[in-house]
Image 1 (tube, helix red, strand yellow):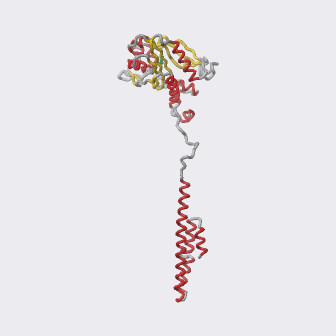
Image 2 (image 1 turned 90 degrees about the vertical axis):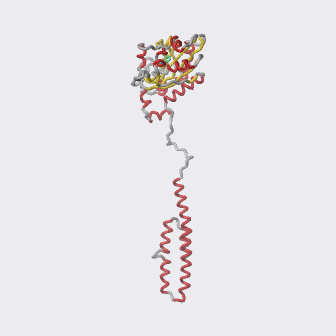
Length: 330
Ligand code: PHE
């Protein structure tokens, strides 16, 4: 009996305990076999024999029950241990989100100009003819409207083709001086390696009294800005035309890939066109009722900046939600 109690106390698992129980108390168990002997025992010894067996049975059952509780608790603890999730454990495999390269570039541009005290203005994506064209010195039937590949709506509104209408809205709502940028989405009927029907621009406008704003100011601000964005690049201003600026210029930087040597990206010219700008045309001020002021404005394509900063070949790939591409910009 001592042996059995010892075996029971040393059992390592519930299975082992159960087979011990069967071995001792089961139908063919050793103790059950002892009880069977009762029949053959003389009557005067029966009582003492039976009492002794009963005591053994009680002691063994008690030992089994106690051990069972301990083993069950062990098993539960082991199970909990195995299922426990350690929320503090660092897992390299977890993938985190990343800011889209276009938004990241836009944010950098916005922050740069906010630091120069430019206010951030917004306007609607669906514009009327007046703000998108007329007030910007683009009268109806003017051939320069062809530059814009416009999405027209039936009610004569348009999906804005540039962020320049925000210039008009801001000037109509505020008095000079004005110092603003307008970041936002624009739309044109265009689709190839370097054009998508939806893209992003950042517009800039500075208006103040005539003695305070000149082309030289514009040039200085843009050279500093472009060198902030692209590093140590050369910047050149090429005469150009926009209906809302006079004089107008397109601005090139020396190619960021070949350092001006000439490569496929810059079409072997050594230069990359990055924005349009100019001194605000007097007709624009007339449209918004401004007098005795001077101003400069510029507009740039954010995707173009992002492509040059991150060396992206196909603009369309930015809008395909391809995680392999986007994951590189973490
Ligand atoms: N709005 C012009 C465009 O979308 C860019 C521009 C803005 C040019 C301001 C000059 C001044 O092409």
